[in-house]
Length: 361
Image 1 (cartoon, rainbow, N blue to C red):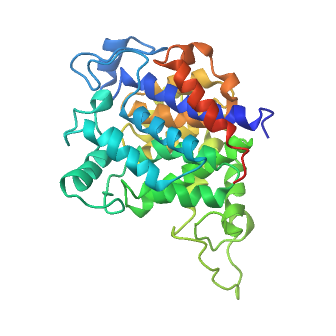
Image 2 (tube, rainbow, N blue to C red):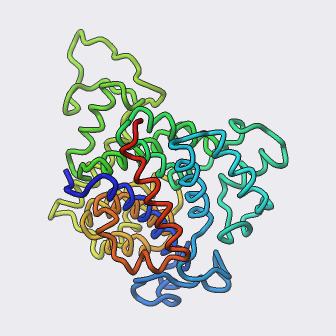
């Protein structure tokens, strides 16, 4: 396990997500890498202004996008209530975010509103539906981008982590595969905050939590994924998710990162290997790979996430949280923290949440 203390790792995870969000603000959603290099040079190494005709136009280097805005809402709610309070989080969305939206993509904090949030806004504001009937079918990572804070808060309690993350995810996304992959990412992050490594052993640790009933995934295999024996009963369902496959992805990608015969060079080309688009099944393998390969090098992990183009902002948020949990807040280069707008406020918010990880769960 990592020698970093748990508060340092918890703070590193949340600050890493904020940094990833802000790093992606300028060069967000370039699917033509030649255009990305034309506008930002061969290597992006810091916060940048968005170009006038691009996403987030009008914002400045070091500011957060709407994903960062919502993550901050979540962190404040967790801090104020000591843990996840669905009623409070939904109230904050109603009062602090939705009045700033108009249902169109190019609007709201950060200059862009994602598909799942637009759908929730329509159902909540226009159709007057209650929370719980607001989720849509977006196959993206927006739920991860906010529930990663829940994962940090409940890093020591996997069962509660899984329940709270699933409960929050369905507010905006109802596809069971998306929910299961979101919960799986949260479970991975929780173990990293505890001090475990993102390596070939991690998925086995997650499977032990499945078999103990702490993670709500179904599995029929025995230890080390051995097949069931004749006469073995069908195990009772531990929860709602049909298979544990989302829990196996991290160790497979970690194995690829460690295998000298499998090289992605330069590492930003992970976006080409796993895909540049927004869908969760493109984003997660790339984030796991970069975070495993650069487990002790926060700067390399997030910068390769950003320089890969496509949905690089989500890739950088997810990679930033996973890598920040491994390096700890103390392992994040100071320039990335100092370059954030309202860095002092964000730093206090992050520290306040990290302080609660050792609180009674």
